[in-house]
Image (cartoon, rainbow, N blue to C red):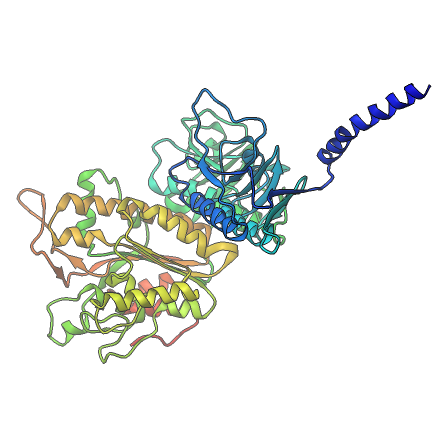
Length: 594
């Protein structure tokens, strides 16, 4: 009898660790020392992806912080392994960002773009965010909360998700109970640029405001159950809408079965996208889910109108004249998309020209006029002809609480971006300009200021900057410059000029879609001056340059959005100072500039 009782006790003792482990897996939290007593078996692991530079930097920062607090220098490596191998089921690793480990994938499924989470699974510590910046913040959070300097320890808690959620304007958006994340945005194969980029704008809208991007594809792809059809696709569900006769300011938005149909002439297809996100998908509070149940069930014409502008976008093609635009058609640019917008022309002469001190403006004086509303002397940045600092529209917008950005394919201290960021008596005082820009960035005086990237990256940077400054419904101002039209015109390299115009054209197409989805925004597309005196040879039809410098030739001017119709009608030809005055009115300054 005693022997049986002893056997039972031994059996219970043997099972107890299993019971504890089971309880731990079922939800009991317990402290796990990752580093203690000057030792650790853990390795930091980050992605092998070449684009994961932020994650690698975050991993290095974590390694340094642990060493400084505990004296232990952990090994760090990327997640690469031969294709015929798989990671072990358990391993003592600290995973940073989107690695190839299952635990990283499990954690990423919990977060949206700007959320981050810290978990412990299969002996692995997972530190990840929905994007690279969120992962960086996750590592900062880990350093602040999990590294115990006084005890020289790093301790995590099992069965606990340390989740930090970003305050998005929207939670999960559903259409008649189906999450919009189930939808694919579909555009016609071979679509024009405006339609193509509108499809991407729809996806970007949900990424910015809800933290998840929708899949975007052409109608060449196999049809999915749930689709948002943008433009005239090959899907039969949009046939009735496309067949309708619509006015220039009309669109169609409806739900046909499991498809959402968007249609309109020219850029007015954006009116349908605007109605979806601004009329039907309305925020009910931070991270609050929305279920749309009232989309029209049959196609009907609706009229789009811009709202009173509270935000502004200024796009500058440096050195771009009318003939620069025409020339790009020779290399396959089927249209300059801004030609769809209401337009006029604009004068660009500086105070130096008025004073007979120069034949034409330079970029510094032109930028100052566009930014401050003051004519000034060539070479002056953000100061009037007397050398007095004058507020620019970006500064005005910032002062009203709007978020602001300046992006350019030139260096950030170039004359045009500097005109919206700095004040100096000389555009050549690069160190002074850079110091002023650094101070703005450091103090939050500007939310996004980037230059020096490749011409073909202009659209990508415009997308990122617009996402940053429009976040959570903020008002904003941004200046977007394509600088190389001018640079190539100075060199009279026609093919490079044409290519630069096409890159600018892509960015304009994206921004038009963005403005349609943000109907309280005014958009101006123009140039600071013409460069090269480009003309068309009447005998050969070829495009030629008559100069390697600027000219006083009037430049193109296009605009849409609240108040722009009145601006365009205010004079047969506009002057560049009127740009600043118009934008200033949007931000509440009715007496601005010269």
